[in-house]
Image 1 (cartoon, helix red, strand yellow):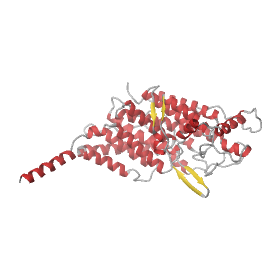
Image 2 (cartoon, rainbow, N blue to C red):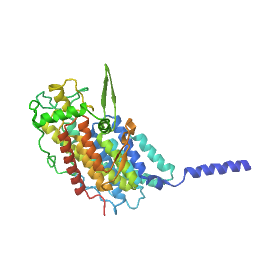
Image 3 (tube, helix red, strand yellow):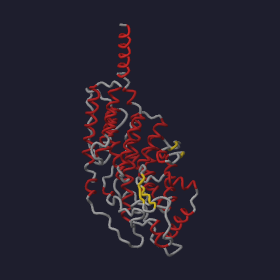
Image 4 (cartoon, rainbow, N blue to C red):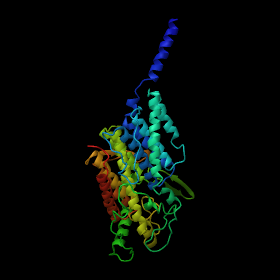
Length: 442
C-alpha cells in the first residue's frame, strides 16, 4: 500500500511538472522569435531563392508578426496600416478574448513566411512544435485557440495585401534579352545563369515614393582602350585588387559573400553550396543586436520588421538602376580585353553590375537598425559560423555597412565607384524609411 502511494505521488509530481503554467515566460523570451526567423532563413536557403525573393519573405513575415504585436500593445506600437503602401487596415483583437500576442505573432510570422512563396506545409513541423510548446507549458486551451484565430485573422489581411504587390505578374514577364554588345551585361561563368529578376523594380514599394526617388549618377562610360578613362581605371582597380588580395581583404570578401547558391566546378564535377542571402545575413544581425541590447519580445519584432522593410525597398530601388543601365561585370571586361583566364575572388552573381545590391541593402538596413538600437552599437557578428567562416566585430551597424561596401570590391564582382555610390543610395533609402515610419510610440 505504501509502495502504491509512493508511485501515485511520483506520478502526480510528473503531471504537475508537465502542466507547469510558465507559458508566459516561455513566449515572452525574444530569443524564441529570433529562432523562428532563423527557421525561416533555413527554409529560404533550402529553396534556393534569390536575395530579392528572400527579402519579400522576410518582409511579409515580419510585418505580419509586427501587426499582431501592435494589436496587442497599442499603447507602445502603431500599426503599419496607412504607413506602408496599400495596407489600409489590419484587424484588431477582441478585448473579450484572452490572446497571447507573442505566441500569435510567431504563428503569423510562420504563416506569411511560408505562404507568400513556399509550397504549403514548408513550416508546418515548426508551427506544430510552437503549439505543443504552448500546451506543454500550461497555456489555457481557450487562449491557445484565441491566439491561433487572431494570428489567422491578421495573416489573412496581410496575405490579401501581399497579393497586390505585382509579384505574381512578374513571374510571367518577359526574360532579359542578352545582347553581346560592348559594356552590356552577359551571363558569367561558371553557371552562365540567366539574368535574375529583371522586373523586380515593378514590385510595389512600401515606403519610398518611387523607383526614381534615389537615382545615383550614371555609370562610367564604357571604355577599355583609353588608360585615362574612368571606366578603364575601374577595370584595372578590380583586376589589381583581386590579384593582390591580402588575407584580411579575402576574409572580408568571404564574410559578406552571402551567395545563396554557389556553383562549384572541379573538372567534370559540379555541385552547389548554399549560404544565407544578403537579406538573411542582416536578419541574423537583427537577432544578434536584439539579444545584446536585451530587447524584450515586442521590441525585437519591431527591430526585425523595420529592418525588413528597409531591405525590401532597397532591393527594389537598386534593381531599377541595374536594369536601366545593364552594365557588364568586371569579370566580363577583364576576360574579353585583358586576361581570359582571370577570375574574381567571389563568384559573380547573375545580374548587371551597376548598382550593387548588397552595398545598397546593407546601408539601408544599417540605418534602420541604428534608429532602433542607436549609433556606436558595438556587436560581434557570428552569422557565418554555420558556413565555416569566423565571426567579425563591428563598432556600429554603419561600420558593418561600410565594410560590406569594400567587400564587393575585394571580391572582384563590383567596381569600386559602384560600391561607394550604392552605399550612398542605400543610406538615403534607409534614412527615408526611418523618417517616414512611425512604428514605436514615444
